[in-house]
Structures are given as C-alpha cells and as structure tokens.
Amino acid sequence: MRRIAARSGSARAQYASEIAMVGAWGVTSNIGPIDPDNDKIPLPEGVEAQMRRIFRTLDALLGANDMTRDHIVAVTVYLTDAPRLLPRMNAEYAKAFPPDRLPVRSVVGAVHLTRGAQVEMQFTLAAEA
Image (cartoon, rainbow, N blue to C red; front, side):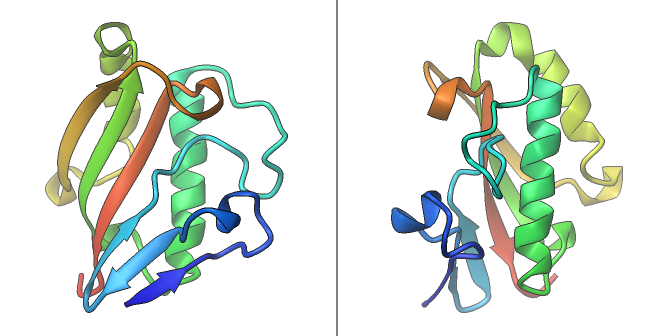
C-alpha cells in the first residue's frame, strides 16, 4: 500500500495520509475547504466557495500523483444543513465534472465539520482511468 502526504509539513500530515493507494484503487482523506498552504487562513464564505477550494486542493493532490478528475470513481459529500445547502452544493458540483463523466456520489448530512466548514468531500480513485 502506498500512502501519500503531498504536503509533509502541513498540520494535517501529522494525523493522516492524503491519499492511500492499494493497487490501482485509492481513497482520499476527507478534503475540506482549508487552505492547504496555510491552515490558519479563514475558511471561504459560502458552500460554493468552499467547494471551489476543495476542488483546487483535490486537483493539486491528483496532479502531484499524475492523476486527474477522470480518475475519480466515487465521491462522498459531507454537508451541514443539507436541506438548505443541497441545491447550492449540487449547482457547484455540476460544474466539477463533464455530464458524461459523473462519478458515483453519496451525500451525507453532518452536524459539524472541521473548523465549522459547510462541506467536506472524500474521493475514491482508480489509477486506470
């Protein structure tokens, strides 16, 4: 098993790998809207901006490992206040993938996320896209 911590000096790296690959399959830790270069920066306001930060972080992790969003086969979205935020999250999520390349997806309601985030995501990867 290969464990990947893209930013070994980050606060997060002391607790978890960012991606674990077992053969051709991989899974990310939950990715939240925390700035990966400085985890003290305030979170972006609004679920849309938080999702954009998550996808920027994801793209950096994937790129550092010669992968793209085409390698994503499943997404679990953790969302606070789902009845209110789900339509806004769905609208932003739809921009992240081409309509013919949508991964399998689950949305889980959450009472509280890291640092009061509105959304976090976990991704399942297949190295053979």
